[in-house]
Image (cartoon, rainbow, N blue to C red):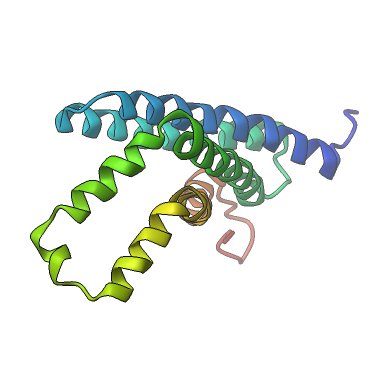
Length: 174
């Protein structure tokens, strides 16, 4: 009889899988920052999005095969939590140390727009403060965006891969 896995082993497996999932995002975001071509940037984004969904599907399916009685949705949420945390930290690192000129270029384009000249002075001050703290705000926004998107995708995947049982009255909801 195989030993039952523990919650700690589920968390450590989720941390490892979340690291691999985040690695896909980190590598493709870094490549995306190096190119100026919009079509190529879109292609990198599409590869990242589809690849991340496929990788999450693979990890959840693998978990379901190993732990058929454990809730696969919960493991998907754990994976997405770790992946979101790693991606958020990388976003902060990227805008602070690797590519700080991206923030400068983005805000310079905004400041040079004709619409910016008609904004009141307090709005200009707010934009300067936003530029100074852009890495922090991006870190927080990236974490919440990735986690909520991962939560939704985990629910869809868990619903689609959970085996149906015709001998029970419930509809095998998550």
